[in-house]
Image (cartoon, rainbow, N blue to C red; front, side, top):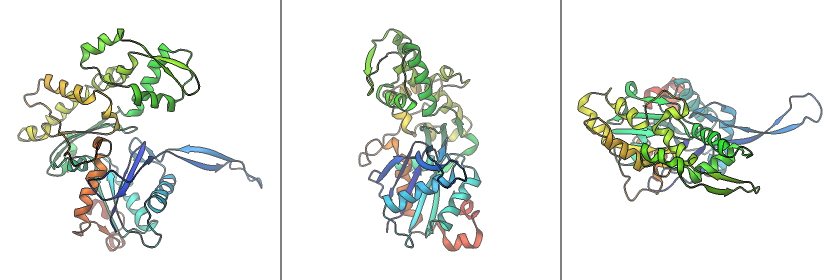
Length: 361
């Protein structure tokens, strides 16, 4: 039985058997609905349909909800049989707290009875997906704050890694604010805004083009409920915030300048190897025009060595950036489990949850 690979993000959970050249078998929302009673002691308590987010900003926050979500994934979605569970590999967001790693391995062995467990950092796995063991990842997901991580020989250089609050949810809120200015009478849910962002958001070619976008043509969009809204420069503002975070009120440098500054913290002999093997990952980096703008900003930066993007191999699935960590996890699973480098049940019984720090790095 193939090992399973799970990459659980704030918006989407990607899971499937470790087959590297295929897309994950399941790509489902992480958010879920649960029926909760009102807490009364009445004979007939009132149940309320509540939406819960097991994962916030990339990290597991609601463990009961996460257990329910994983039960659905591994047993209903991927066909595991209770009492005959196999091996599983999880992807770790950058700087995952030790307590979360320990609670996850405990959940896997004590509740799901897995026969083997492994976890590896998403930055390393995203590089594996494009055939690299050294380079730098720029990962901007939905709820997760932006992660920039240099990786040398398969090891994240934590001293030079950085996270800053610029995830997809922040851009959705910005888009809602901007739409509200030009459509003051609109009545949109954040779900509506999210869909509009996915359809319209784009990056201007450069700052000059963004300024010219003040006079861009307005488009009309009819919502399912019949509301008609106009969309103009707002669609560029979303992408521009990645290169000018001041739009969001953040005192931060743009994403390319952040990358160059971070790499400068690593030994100079590694600068070329890191910058010239840059990988974009996370759904937010798939905004129309983002890659071209990123490369243009890279060509303009003052660094002697400029960032260059790695193209994924042709045999890899399309839209690899959306689930590159999962693909890298599928590649790694083909190594760690056959070579017995993973955490076994015997390891767990002997050492307890802390074994994850010794065997998974």
